[in-house]
Length: 247
Image (tube, rainbow, N blue to C red; front, side, top):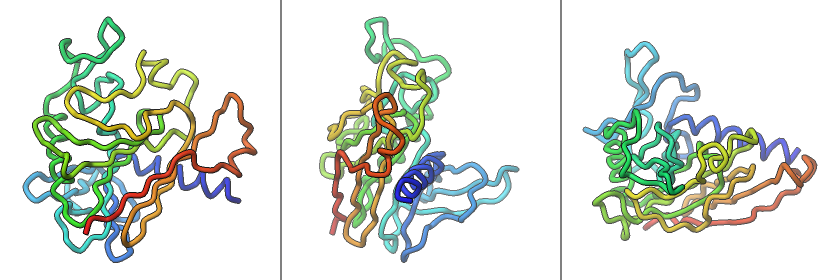
């Protein structure tokens, strides 16, 4: 039963990683129970809104400036903090001939507006008061955690943003970034990231416990090459992080 519970939670995180924000508002989620549409960030009022599939209607999901929300977590499909040189990422970095990320080569199809949106989201998070600044994403098929202390020309040393790679619960053998892209998850040139756990390419998941005064993160990993499925039931976290809620 414990294995099913852990995997179920991991799957829920994977679903949420489609791009949304979780707001703990008086013990309730600040988004509709059934999400159907595209979530966008309104730069004018710092709202995350849900646009209906037909383009009509807006549903407010969360506001990063709200003072009555205990916890708010951004869960984008592409993780801020790392890059594997993919064209659909926030960052302009691409794999160079030396096997390292570079911005000296134009990335096909990449749009500067993506990075501008990234910077606005990070600025919005950094401006929050009384809440932990946390981003969780699972798209880079790795497990890791770091603190973003610079974003472009924004100095975030006093208001660092914790960014988490929640881990893949299942990955094709050719799906790991280092195998498919030729490089693992790597901090791009646009930011400064202090890695607490450098990205690990293994199956795994993250459990987040939300309490009134903090968020506790537990990181789990499982090696499909050497571990049996039965091991999942007794997994213990290989790393834990406590994120106190700022006063």
